[in-house]
Image 1 (cartoon, one colour):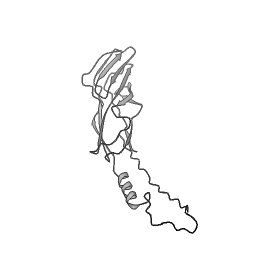
Image 2 (cartoon, one colour):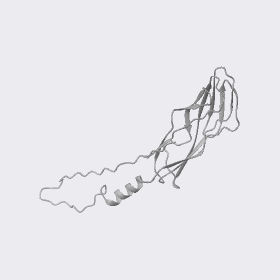
Image 3 (tube, one colour):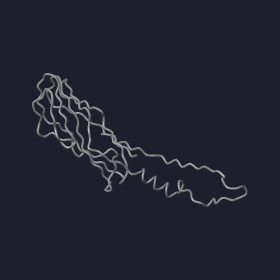
Image 4 (cartoon, rainbow, N blue to C red):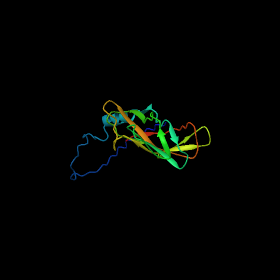
Length: 178
């Protein structure tokens, strides 16, 4: 799994223009809210809060009985509900969605990206794939007031061919501060 942190750059810009009447002095002691040391320090502290991603549970489709003719699909929702279709007659009772815990700055918006599909490889020459990874994340995820955000994810597993065995793969999850 990879975690990448996006550190926003603070680019203060000053525009000096004399908008007053000629010969009239402007108050040059007025503070610049964009350029104040307190604002810059708080922004720097905010962007230095590290994001940490912890895998709480692996995505597990368990056992699938495949008929061998055509294609089978097992859809596993983030809530743990498994639905089978196609050339399969059974799915294991221990299918589990994956779960992730993200730690970061409380109240901070984050972007979480999962791959479109994941190729899984077995001991032999066969391979299967997980398509359409889905999560229970809201449209605009935020780190909670306790500094954590947790979510679960599932996906659609597609099986075809004659590849018996145990299949494994990895899912790269990208998390960035906004």
